Image (cartoon, rainbow, N blue to C red):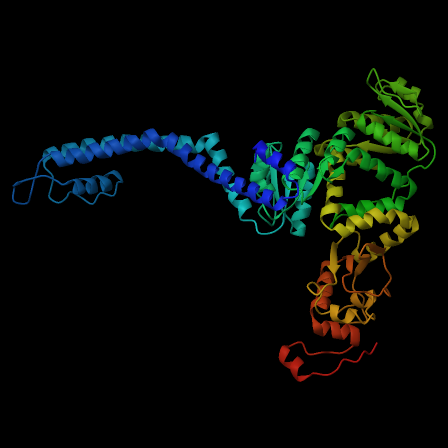
Length: 605
């Protein structure tokens, strides 16, 4: 995997993907064999001296028994053969002790056996001590862990995602994907994070490797070359490492999806030079979300709720100020991104930063240099007349103190705060922040929306054009059907493979969406599901009405309770349920009664 010739041939013969994939997989198999051999050689090298010692002790003991004369049952001289001597020393050295054979020993033989027993005890003590030392050796444990990990990945027979980096973002996505039944494989340089995988209560076994994500060899061992690898998630907090992962995936597996995290626009441009990865910048993404919240609070509430995944409580609908001046503390990468987004909404910005030299912009050249928690700096920013305040530094303690100082000066100000460490979440919750920016959660929600259900990402991309009133009605509908917590989100595909009972009737043009969401037990009762989107080819319809006519090949995104999801799946697969819903006809469910009751179906709708 680390052979630069592979990269050269990939660039030279880019169209021959199948041949290259075969070569790379073959190289990975060879590497796996080398790992197994390396582990065996490590054991032999560390245990060589103890094993030689035991062999020498056994050989000397056996030779001594054959040379020392004994007596047979008649008192005649007798010498033990090599096989008998070896047999006797074998069960004596292993503490089994069957007895003397084939005749009782003489005093000389017993003296030699006594000497051999103590010598063997010393040899075994030396060998066992060396074995225990080997088991505690870091290199040996890492070799065994690598072997176990390689076997786990090789045995995977379902599509999986290769996740590089298992910080807070990885933890959030790991739990969400586990609930969806999506298999993941993790590689991280921290042994504490990999050990946490074994302690986490996942339904499926999650293979984890302690390795360098920038090493293509480690990526190959982690499953990049596996035929069932469906995508790569570069989620480390190092932009260069994420760039390396993106490059390796684009060169070695250009056919799979790559999602990478970065906060640097320059790194993002370099990532886009390799294929078509999805690049998520949490600073830029949060600015877009805040702009949506300023223009359409209900749309912001809906998007935040759906991106949080099943089980998330409906977030409160905020009312951020649309006009006035905002004070922004922290003018680094995040601050500049957010300032540009707020200015794009027509808001005035006063920036505060502790740096001695700060880049200024033409629209707002006055940037106050100083500690925003000091009263004179707050006075210079005229915080009492501001409508919004952003605590956006990369230090949680500073941000908390800034929020306290801002509210002391202006109790009614709208507050946006940045949380950098998960451990400080209770402190920020106690402050009752209006809008929280947690970079790890922004990335996790974005990745979840794109990977879990592709239709959900399309829905989120197109929903802003529907308006805030539409979003408000949809939130009310979701709360009415699902309750205060989001239930299941799933996709239904009307194909012969996924809906064999329903597809034959779609060609008539009489099957509507309202027919599909009725209960198979009582056709007059509607299932507690909300159709979110119907995709037909390249076109999509958001929140279609019940009279929307369905066609074969349609993809439907639905939200609802798990029990109603199972009921809907019954409609797609069960002929009797289909005939009851479409024709109000109770058809026999068994094969024999269906054969006996062959009658033409007449709609009674």
